Length: 380
Image 1 (cartoon, helix red, strand yellow):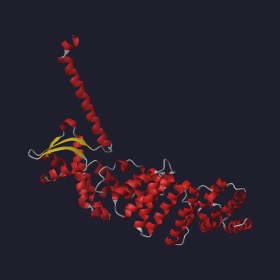
Image 2 (cartoon, rainbow, N blue to C red; image 1 turned 135 degrees about the vertical axis):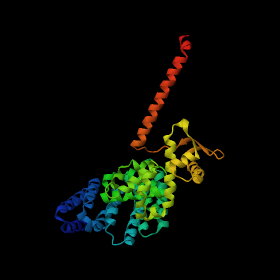
Image 3 (cartoon, rainbow, N blue to C red; image 1 turned 90 degrees about the vertical axis):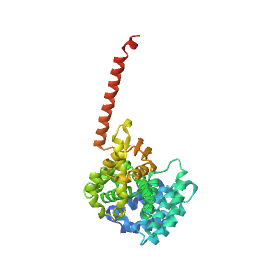
Image 4 (cartoon, rainbow, N blue to C red; image 1 turned 45 degrees about the vertical axis):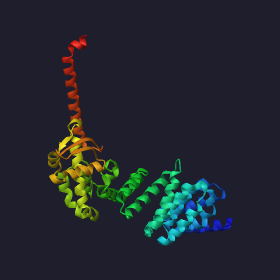
């Protein structure tokens, strides 16, 4: 496209643009003529970030940006393309558009941009319910990412976000939980809208509860996104903390809310098993290390589990790696020598403080006893 055509196009677009954006088109032409590609790219991003630019994005990208696409930062090129893609009339058009973008940046020196675009393609395929093809794109992207020493955070954030969406669509809760947390680690939570924060906190909480492999919610409990549940879904936040401390009484109080969520209701039996395991590990945790030989009767009283199910409960905890130890089936005693670490609430921290004070006191008593009994030895 010749200079006159570009100038005419920018003049037309300037006239169509809102008054507060028209000055940017003058900058576009000036920077383009002077071949100041970096400054031109940043000015284009400023324009694309304005909501009022929406009707013009696709035209500006196709008619103007593509004329110098090879001269600018390829990751920023994809960023502009992703913004323009929001104006495609449907998912199918968006898929074709983004596939062309991915192919354009698929060069040895711009693999980060290629991953960024490929992940965007996978997003659209998920919208079209083409899960198999989306998985192939994500696997390809993951392989490329694994080969990088470093990469822009936005690329990793995009990958983890779409990977989480894929696993959520497959109801693979543990994988969704892990990828969703990794996504949150790559972004500023405050950059999400309040609605997005609440939605992600809600989905993460449900996934943590219904997964049959997640028994430690530490990362989620410590994450500020959980605060977004305080206003409308306080019960869900309280339920997570009840599981964390193995609080059967709190669980019974909150159990009425379970039917409000189809997934929780579907996994009601699994949740009951999970809270029993949490109660068991909390019972062990509260005991000092030298007093962890527990009878089945004691465990039944602490966990409210029927005596005939105690052995199965302990074996389940051992197989999941929540506890380490052994079972004496004849004497009905469990000897526990390790319990999986977890995040502590203030009450649990206070219990640890008391145990440390007891330990300190016993050490002092032992020291005094040795000093009293061994006076002659010390004197010698």
